[in-house]
Image 1 (spheres, one colour):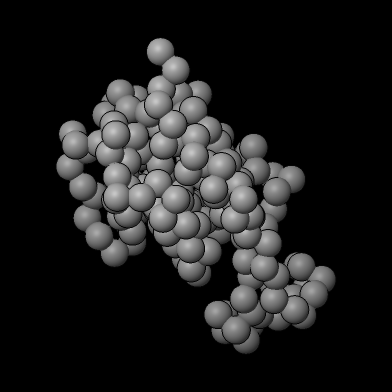
Image 2 (image 1 turned 60 degrees about the vertical axis):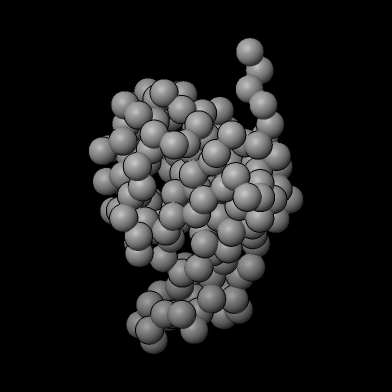
Length: 161
């Protein structure tokens, strides 16, 4: 069963998690960074994992565009979705806002994989804002490698038919 992992993230956390999932699935997984690569032809995939980071409540535009363009095709595939962000308490809102019905309901798994905040990745003004918002002047690393492994195992498992 061939698996497409199509993702878009801004600061590297989403890519780390997509690579982890692909590594767990193995040779049947193909990674596509929608920020850097064109969307692939969907016919060769049985399984699709969609992933994105959250900034101001939304996933990056290339992922939004991919979902909109492939909506009907995605509904004919096994779909799993993941998000990377620091705001776990808002994760249900982020999933429902960024993955429209009926795709949201169709997805077999909706998984929050944590997030990271590396202050040096941002300019001085943004760093100051982030320090005020988070209440810390330290980097935050809260990626859930175990959740990524569980998502990979679930996606790679045979369908229950």
